[in-house]
Image 1 (spheres, rainbow, N blue to C red):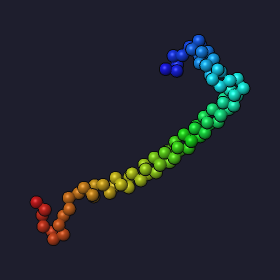
Image 2 (tube, rainbow, N blue to C red; image 1 turned 30 degrees about the vertical axis):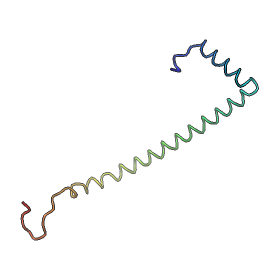
Image 3 (cartoon, one colour; image 1 turned 90 degrees about the vertical axis):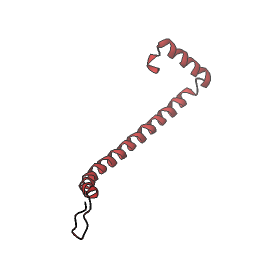
Image 4 (cartoon, helix red, strand yellow; image 1 turned 90 degrees about the horizontal axis):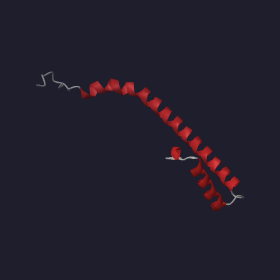
Amino acid sequence: MIGNMGGPTLLVILFIVLLLFGAPKLPGLAKSLGQSMRILKKEVRSDDAKSDEAGSAATEAKPESAEAAPDAHAPKRPSDGSDPV
């Protein structure tokens, strides 16, 4: 949707923003928008790093659980030595 906007459309949007906020407030608005974007990117990167760490820890723990899984599903033999048929 945003990629379909051409030059005239962007000029109209810029004009409307200029009318709404006024010329003196635009630099402060741009600064706060930039700071917000920086904070958002930092949080996304830290969240990705946390999920990567959790993913690597899960893959390290997975072989241990895979070894235990066949024993958990194996049929249990009675302790008296009889055949469980």
